Image (cartoon, rainbow, N blue to C red; front, top):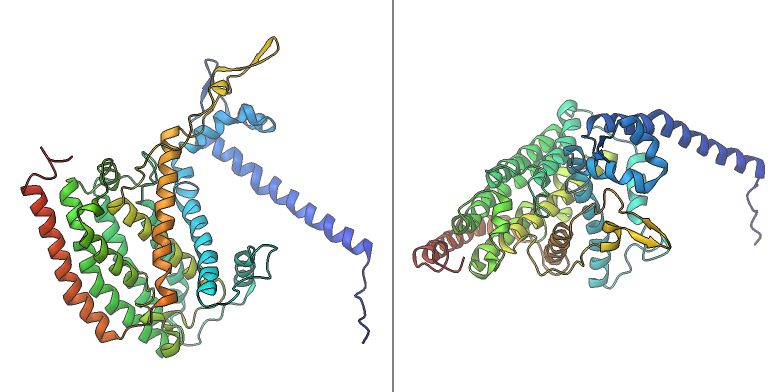
Length: 432
């Protein structure tokens, strides 16, 4: 059997290559460079050699990385960087993307399958990129009788709510998007929006399977939010603060999970239910209601909901780390920044340096971020694990677990915290 090779023309290949180069240059000149200039005018410029750096001079420094470092450092101190890059949306989206890939490979190994394999030279490493391009390019189909404005808005609201949740999670000392005194109350308020967005999305589709899934999600989230909130009150009483950064800093000697293991267990179970993870995936039960409240979503609308779901997973894992595992606290493992780059390097008779703008991050921040990421990844692993080993439970079992057993255990956790305080084990005069 002969195979006819496709016609290959070098001229067509060169033409397509030049077209791509043209559009890249066009977009960089039209969008990229003006955006950089706008950012330079917004950020607070550094003082170098006794003079305030101007945006125009900083723009010309882009050709020299060692001279642009002070500008980069100034940009990293802005709210724009914290919201878009670190520790905000960009950082959370990166962890979420890694979580999706690891989950698919881990479940494949647990079930003796291969998992993503072809897209990418190593273990299907580019599968996530391929799926993203597929979702972007697929047609978005809107049901004929759907409430179109709400149906369109629901995925965007879901991602926005998840991003707002991420904003409260402190990654390192001083590195949090929204460091408010009532941070934990803000988390509770944001979590309360998820069932509203879910039921709106399910109702707007005007289809029976999404509506059944939305009602299930509403029942599940409402019944588990009460023990979820109560399970965190023990750590709040021991800390004496609702600020998440202060709660993390208070665990420099030992994590609260040592004294409040019941609260940690209750929070972990309710967290699985809030995330609609197995064994609490009734709102998306594929074998019963197709895909639940996600049934009618297609294309990038479905992709936005998946992105929001994994952002929410990261935020819950980060909240567990902050409340019960000590947040960023851990032994100092990051070496100090090389002194030569700060004081200057001798190269023959010439002393080069010190390089202005270094270090971009201090040692304490890097060490804290490292411990936070390691702890968060470990919690995410235990969140993913039940999907490969547990079956789905019935609705009546789920409601009974949420309204009776977990609420009782949450109150037991509160009584333990009160006992530790009144016995003087913790608090003034105690171990703290």
